[in-house]
Amino acid sequence: MSDCLFCKIVAGDVPSTKVHETPTTLAFRDINPQADVHVLVVPKAHHEDAAALAAADPRLLADVVGAGAEVARLEGMAEPGYRLVFNTGEHAGRTVFHAHLHVLGGEQLGTFGRPTG
Image (tube, rainbow, N blue to C red):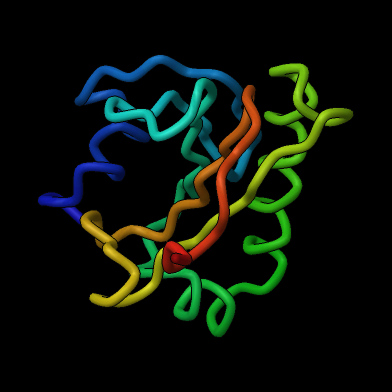
């Protein structure tokens, strides 16, 4: 899609800091990191969100998750742990309408979801 930020990154029209690439995925550093390590993994083919990706191409969804695990290994997070997150829909805070997996770690992560207390 011509107006999609992540499609432009995949095409090389918008710069990014590449971490990992496969024939079907691209992983790059998030410009607004939410953890010491915050990498986005996107399918090179445009799909609006994780649900659309799963419906259209389950194998590509598996490629994205596998690339996320490889990013965690490359970043030294496989043993201490990491988080994989897809944001889908308005309530999840999604801001870019191209399926993408957040790989977060490099530090002790806090609770997940709504804060308690």
